[in-house]
Amino acid sequence: REVTALTDSIEAKTEAIGTLGVSIVTMKADLTDTEAALIADQQFLKELDQSCKTKTAEWEERMKTRAEELVALADTIKILNDDDALDLFKKTLPGASSSFVQLSAGVARSRARAIDILQGARDAAADDDRTQLDLLLLALTGKKGASRGMFDKVIKMVDEMIQVLKKEQTDDDNKHEYCSLQLDAAEDRKKELEHTIHGHETAIDAATEAMATLGDEITALEKGIKDLDKSVAE
Image (cartoon, rainbow, N blue to C red; front, side, top):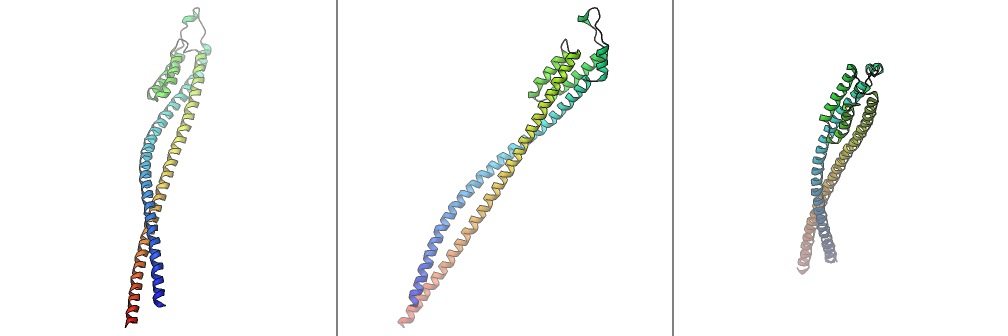
């Protein structure tokens, strides 16, 4: 009866070793897949990080340029809305030959200052914004550039451009935030995969150790059976 019990125990432990062996093979396959996924995610994270850094540099440059444009446009409105300039327009009356009216020195100076500011903004602006600034400059430098009506028209165009620039800034801020969120999500996934890999490795080590223990126990049981057989024979 004792031999039978020992034999049953050996069979059970042998079956357990077989089950653990299958588990180890499965876990190693899962580990390989997870490691491959981690490598792919690390490459994606690297590329995303580089892309975000490039976009951040571009974003900071656009933000700086856009801020300068907004200041220039605000200054332009201030100059064209200046009380002195308005007074000069009111005082400037057409002479006998209205098509050759001499511009007031103050009005011409206001226009020149506005042109200088817009030209500076145009030179520093991004390519996409230069077209609008060119239109503003064209309006101010044209034959009617020193008329109150043209000043009002330019002020309206400047106001519209300011709104466009502010919307562009908001859009860029949202894109910048999205890039940061993408980086955070990719970093979180990388950590999850690393944790999963560690779990697989720990489980494989534990299963391998359990198999070794069962093997030792089976060896001991087999020795016990031999000892019993020897004892019976004697």
